[in-house]
Length: 69
Image (tube, rainbow, N blue to C red; front, side, top):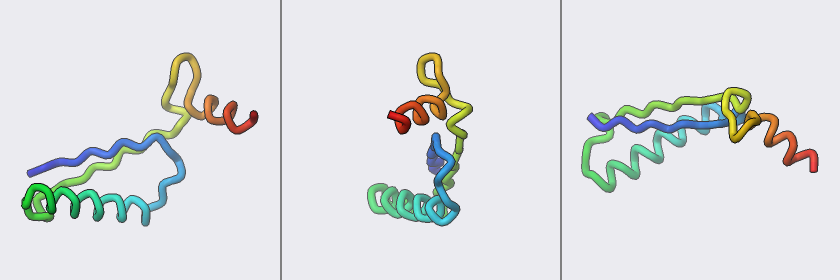
């Protein structure tokens, strides 16, 4: 059974967008592999930007600094 992991660093992805991601990714993989869609499991992991760091700052702080300029 294929397992697809999607990791997001975001707080802006809606439930509807997640549904669409799952549908499109699964369809694409079915087209490529000919494995039935019911065999695929998709896991979406979301991390708030405050829980991720780049260098010495959180991504939340980094993006805040970028938009402030």
